[in-house]
Picture (spheres, rainbow, N blue to C red):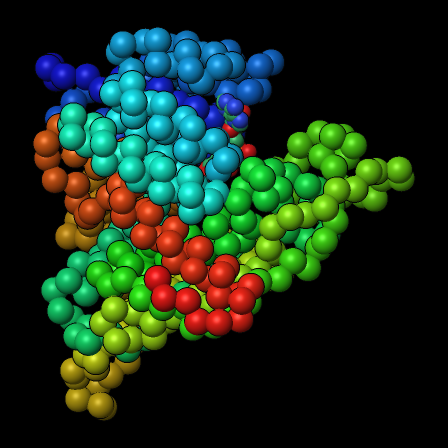
Amino acid sequence: MKTKTLGIGLVGTKFMGKAHSNAWMTAPRFFDLPMAVDLRAVAGREVASLAAFAQRWGWRCCSDDWRDLLDDPQVGLVDVCTPNHLHAEVSIVALEAGRHVACEKPLAGTLADARAMRDAAAKAARKGVRTFVWFNYRRCPAVAFAHQLVKEGKLGRIFHVRASYLQDWGGPSTPLLWRFQGKLAGSGAHGDLNAHIIDMARFITGEEVTEVVGALEETFVKERDLVESAGGAIAGKGARRAVRGVRKGKSTVDDAVLFLARMSGGGVASFEATRLATGNLNRNQIEVNGEKGSLKFDFERMNELEWWDHTLPARMRGWTRIMCTDAGHPYAGNYWPAAHVLGYEHGFVSQAADIVMTLGRKRPVVPIPDFADAYETQRVLDAAVRCARTRRPVRV
Ligand SMILES: NC(=O)c1ccc[n+]([C@@H]2O[C@H](COP(=O)([O-])OP(=O)(O)OC[C@H]3O[C@@H](n4cnc5c(N)ncnc54)[C@H](O)[C@@H]3O)[C@@H](O)[C@H]2O)c1
């Protein structure tokens, strides 16, 4: 019997709501955790389907008002899976109520919101309250392994980071979801996708982005069908038949942002995020080139890490494809025997496990970003936008 229990209150029931419900439910089964996990309550706006969601995913109760979660004294952690404009409000109220908070990325839609969250987290930390941000790709075994290899000095001095996160669901037939509305999302592909690769670059290299020297942002699709008049929400599924008389609204976010940056170790980096790179479904890629070797990761082949050992004699050099499913790789040993591969959901399960480890005063397998850490990523996002708009380099 575990003596302590962590009660979870979840806000949001759709894409991330499902991923996190599964994570909280599954983590105690694959990891030996210092606390039990209790799925206390879930809040969302899908009133008609809320109760069914709660029952299906094992939540004790549900509400259409997220503030209700805080009435339950057993809720020790609030998990925020809402659109970005709500991250600050929900997180800050929960922190002030003495609850730990695990918030989805990007930390917020705006730098001002992110700063307020960072400050609220610092204040709450004085009372032992913790914050976490769901940069889930850190917990792909291959990415966590890349972080470990760099930390062990296997790459030596880092010269290049080349990161791109390419999707293709944001074509003209995709309606005006919240993701295309600046007031709700803050930005488009930038905050959604560049946030992940900035975090991965910082995590793998252990370095900070110090300056954005050039950037561009582009909105290819200026107007989109309003979701209501298009006959209901469509979760980013492309091709729909044209409907006569559909009302249109303005897209107020970028579809793509590219930028060039300098890293604190003297290396240089490029970042690209887009939702219109046809043929690339969820291609989250990063390559790091160091003095002693290089690493390459592509989420579409998420169980693999490519490794180039530059210390070998030239005639022996070549890319090595490492299946990161061995018990010696981070997280992999908690799941299946070698080469019985992991999927998208395992990153969330592993993060839920690491959150419970942290709250139970054990070490996570690899570091989890808190609000202060995610704020650094947000500063880079903000610098890139300012650089694109002023056409001037911006120091971070
Ligand atoms: N870590 C990742 O890889 C990843 C992937 C997708 C999305 N995200 C992030 O997760 C967050 C949610 O994205 P999503 O894809 O799940 O969106 P979604 O549209 O699928 O779901 C949003 C949920 O928020 C709920 N919601 C909205 N307003 C609310 C309110 N006032 N009170 C309570 N609930 C409310 C909705 O009911 C819905 O259940 C975003 O910040 C997004 O950037 C992260």
